[in-house]
Length: 356
Image 1 (tube, one colour):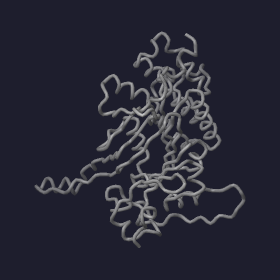
Image 2 (image 1 turned 60 degrees about the horizontal axis):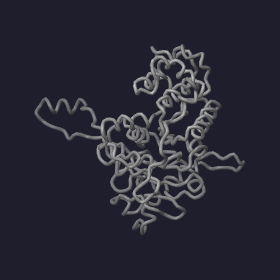
Image 3 (image 1 turned 180 degrees about the vertical axis):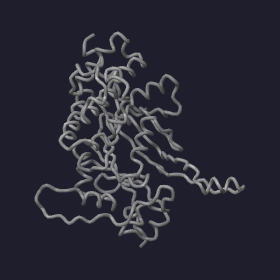
Image 4 (image 1 turned 180 degrees about the horizontal axis):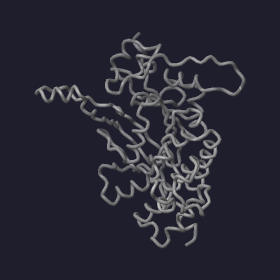
């Protein structure tokens, strides 16, 4: 078996086209929300035993999110911890089922796909997780982990599996002779490369990278980011790259999406977002990015704490921390709409003012 037979993505006719001939998004989310039921605490259990009932509270992880990713695009998804980035990534990868809204893959609603097409979707959209220590089975050898899914999907036979695993490890810069070792025998950077090889082994066209370099040393981060870019060019991959670090997504993203408390507040090309951020939250984030040009910077942290997703504030979720908020921001949710410079922003400053 030749390496060229196993490492290239499956042959496809080309990007999916709409009825009008335009290229369709590879992945699209339409008004997607995700809520998690909170487990009953001691007070709720006592109330239930006494015949009472306390209202069930939900974590509002995602709130009416619209997002599209075009074939070959690298979209960076940024926001504070707890804003819903990882939940969004898991919804895109099919790990979590959205509570409402629609997820589309190549123009088809994933909820309506046949069993065989749903299986193809779960193979084509893969995820690389943040913690390479927790995402690898400590009892399996590396070669087994890399080849397990391709065998299950019928991409290779059991006879070919060992050579296939060697090829995939070589692709991500690891010595294929190490494939019979266990995960604990590798460094953190090597483990993350193994996770990438495992994701690529089923020939995906879309990778969700959830803080994929956050747990690595800075020098190793650079190596892994360069690997992601090389793989994108050689395999024609599309990425949703989730991070809390704007400098990381600035390095490799074509477009950046900013999230705050379960909502998308801004989306723009990387150059446009850094040169002229539109949303007050985005401006605050960009101002805090360290500069290497020698200029003196005065860091002004965003005032206040991010509200609890159990009880998000009404109106614009950012209004309790926004210096420009007015009465309208406290009662009306702003829509994500086009603004100057090709941005999309969810802010009442751009749809008639705050009413202040």
